[in-house]
Amino acid sequence: MKTYKAFTLAEVLVTLMIIGVIAAMTLPSLNQNIQYNHFVSGCLKSYSVLSQAINRMKVDYGPIGFGTKWNNPDDFWKGLVAQMNVVEDCGKNKNGCWYNYYVKQSNGKNDANYSLGGRGNIEW
Image (tube, rainbow, N blue to C red):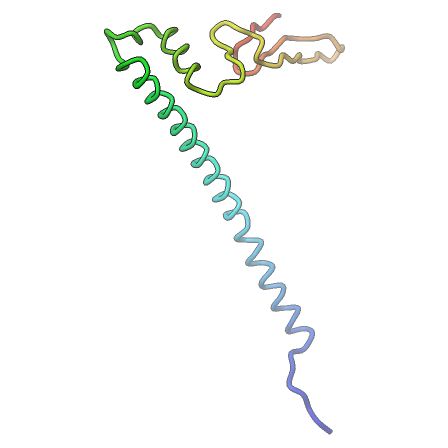
C-alpha cells in the first residue's frame, strides 16, 4: 500500500486561523493609513488649488499685500473667487449655503434651529 505525504485538516485549519488573526491585527492600521493618506492628499490638493488661484491673481492684477489693490479683504475674496471654479459664493453673512435643522424636544416641538458651519442664528 502506498503512503502519501500531505497536511492534515487540523494543520491546514490552524494555519488559516493564524493567518486570519494576523490579518485582523493589521487591517485596522492599514485602514488608518489609507484615511491619513486621503487626508494628506486632500490638503495638498487644496493648497495647490489656492496657490494656483493666488498666482493667477498676481499675474492678472499685480502683487498681493498691504498698500496694494488687495488691501481690502472683500476685494481679495472677490478676486480669489473669480480665479477659482466656485459653484456658489456663500460670502459673509449669507445663510443660503447651509442646511438648517432642528433639534426636537421630548414633546415633539422644535428646540433650536442649528445651521452647519456656525453660519446661522440659533433661535431659542
